[in-house]
Amino acid sequence: MATVELRFSALPEHVRTARLVAAAVARRAGVDESVLDEVRLAVGEACSRAVGLHQRGGIGGTVRVALTDQEKRFLIEVEDEAGPAAVPAPGAAEGGDPDDDTLGLAVITGLVEDLEVTKGADGGVIRMSWPVSVTSVAV
Image (cartoon, rainbow, N blue to C red):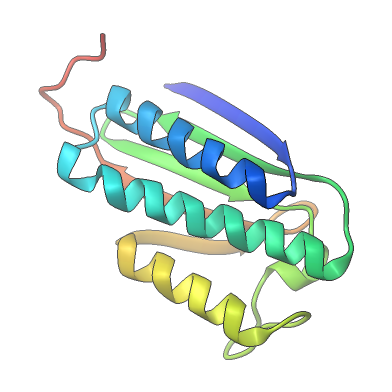
């Protein structure tokens, strides 16, 4: 099980880099080409949400993206350091514009079948995974 970890300052200009890295690592892990756009979009939404939570809360810190190639799944975790506001309460989002948070999570939910939004050590964690092709071989 190989993991690539990316940490970046909670700034919007770094989200594009996270999307590109996620797509490249997903391709190498064996995620089907037809799903790579979904991976790219889901990571972009999750990272944009994390950056937004940091900025709305006036919080510094970093966003962590962990890309893990498991035996049959490709797992991505996006973790923020935005504190309790990072985990949405059922039916509402605290801090900032609730519509932005709800919309971002709705987009991710539409893109990812295996999705979990939980509380991490310092904020929220969005955990997403996709199946990998067993026949593919990383070069």
